[in-house]
Image (tube, rainbow over all chains, first blue to last red; front, top):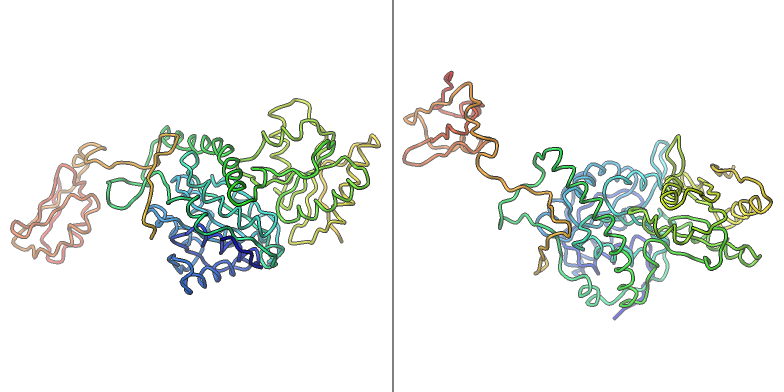
Amino acid sequence: MSKTLVLTGNYAVAYATKLARVDVVAAYPITPQTTIVEKIAELIESGEMNALMINVESEHSALAACYGAALAGARVFTATSSHGLLYMHEWLHWFSRARLPSVMAIVTRTIGTPWNIWSDHFDFYDQRDTGWLLNFAMDNQEVLDLTIQSFKISEDPRVYLPVLVAIDAFILSHTATPVELPDEDAVAEWLGPRRQGYVVDGSDTIAVGNLALPEDTEELFMDIQKAMEESFTVIKEVDQEYGKLFGRSYGGLIQCINCEDAKYYTVAMGSWTGDLIEAVNKLRGEGYPIGVVRIRFYRPFPHRDLWDRLNNAKGILVYDRGLSFGAWGPLYTDLVTGMYNYTRKLPIISNIVAGIGGVNITHSDFYELTKQFVDEIEKGNEPIRFKWYHKR
Amino acid sequence: MRDKLVIEKPVHDKLPIARPRIGVAGKTGTWRVEKPVVDNNKCKRCYQCEIYCPVNSIRVEPETGVIIDYEYCKGCGICADVCLFNAIQLIPE
C-alpha cells in the first residue's frame, strides 16, 4: 500500500533508499546532508531497513567504501554536500570509469570561503565531467521519485553508470511537505535484483583498475559516451514506467510548463523553478506567451529535447544558480552549444546568474526579470546577454 | 545482503576489467641484476618472503623450504630484506 508522510527533502531521500532496498550505505556527515544519513541510521536501527551502515572518517573513504561494496555486488548509496563532495570528487571518476551502478544524493551548498551553508549549484556543476548522470529535483515528492528512478536507470545494462540526485539545501532538504511513498513491494518488484556488468566475489579471476594502454583506455571512455547517449531513452522509459505504476511521471529529461503556443521560454533547474513557474503563471495571466522549461537531467544534457521544444522560440532566458568564473552559467553554455547543433541561426538567448551564496530569489524577482526580458525584445531592443542579478 | 544478484553484460560489450595471466609482460626474470639465493638450512619456514614477494615468485614448502621462480623474479630483493634469519642473500647475476 502506498502511504503519505510529511517529510523533509532529506527524509524523502532516506525513505527512497529504504524503498530501493539499498544494501550498503557509507557516508560522512556534513550540513545540510546530515539528516539523510541520520534518518537511514534510524531506519536500520529500528529494523525497518535491512542495510549495512559503514561509518567512515571522510567523504573520500565513504565513496571508496561504496566502490568496494558495489564491486562485490551490493546496491550502494551515499550522500554529501559542498566541501564533502569536493573531497569525494576523485572517487566519482573511479566509479563511472569502472561502470559501477550506484546512486548518491547531494544537497547543494555553497563552497567556501567564506563559510556558507546555503544553496547554490557550484558543487553540483563541479561534478559535470565525472561521467555520472546528474539530475536535479524540484520538490520533495520528486526527490523521492527521482531517487528511486535513479536506481533503475543506473542498473540498466544500456547505462551502467552511477547517478547523482541533487536537491537544494534547506529549501528542500529541511522543509517538510506531504510526500507519497509508493508500495514497498511494488517498488522492489519493479527495481528487481541488483544488476551490474561484473562482480568481484572470488568466483572469477579478474582485475579492476590496472594499467591499460592508450587505445584500450580511449575505447572504454568512448563506451561511457555511448552509454550516456543510450541513457536518453532509458531515462524516458523509466519515467514513463514509473508514471504507469506509481502515478507520477515528470516528462523525462526536461519538464515543460505553460509551453503550449509559447514564444518565449525561461529555463531553470532545481527548487527555485517552483518560484519561476509562479512568476510565469502570473505573466501568462497578463497575456505573455511564455513557458518554463525545467531541466531535470543536466547530464546527459537534453539537447534534443530542448531543441524540439525551443526551435520556434523568439527569446530564451536561462537562469543559472552557478557560474563558471570568467565565462557564463553552465546551463546557458550547454544550451547555446546544444541548440547550435541543430541550427545556424539561434534565437536571442540570455543568461541571468542569481541566487549565489544562497541569496533568496523569489517569484517577484523572477517576475520582474522575465517580464523585462520579454518587453525588451517586443520593443525591438537587444536584451543584455549576461547579467549577474544581485539584489543589494 | 540481497538474495539475488544479476550479472548482465553491458550493451556496449567492453568492461573495464582485466584477466590476469602468467607472463603477459614476458619473462621478467631477464630484468634481474641481483639474484636472491636461499640457504634452506637457515630457513625456518616463516613465510615472510612468500607474503612480501610483490610478484608472486616465491613459494615456501614445509619440506623443501623456499622455492624461487627465477623466470619471473625481477630481483627486487624484498625477500632478502624481510628474511628474519639471513637465509636469503643477493648475488650479482
